Image (cartoon, rainbow, N blue to C red; front, side, top):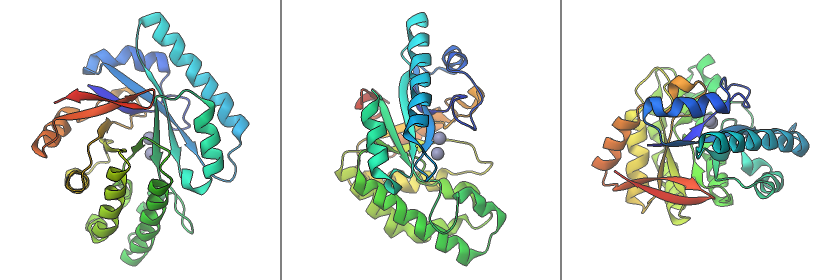
Length: 260
Ligand SMILES: [Zn+2]
Ligand SMILES: [Zn+2]
């Protein structure tokens, strides 16, 4: 199995070294993973800071790959690239990434969507979700990434009102249809959130398939090695039941199929 979304200690919220991650993979039947540390395109983001961090990560991956004959992939999770596409493109063009993940965590006039857990007022959730899907749509129209990550990110944080997410099925379908037309991948993100996300994952996967989507990646979004490959066997079975014959991982920004 291949895990296309793992954070190392080079993300603020990551905990383990690239070396430790590489050593851990065989324990959970993972052949290889992509190290996809965070890079949020917020006002404070300076290219030089990103460059230094990415050079460090790339060197660590190279060292591990040479020493262990491993094949860890070098990726990045670009957060809100649609907010500063010039900088996002400069970053993408400055490194030999294997995979670019596109994500949205924060929305205008709010903050990181995870802060929804602080209030469960339904109208507030609707406003934030509307803005969230608007931003994702801009990201997908921009189209310079490979994989759209955790489309159901807000669901992790909506306390007891997760069903509101389904009110945005039209927006979701529009996004997933565009993604499919662009031949980009949808990530089945398995990060545990203390609740069962299966209905949300299934809805997105089915909408993607219905609109011609072909490429699905698996991403644990692990911030600790123990979470690498989490729930992959169950998700692979779900993909199979949805009619997928393979999932993909990315090498040199090209999808490589893995039969299921
Ligand atoms: Zn993320
Ligand atoms: Zn992540």
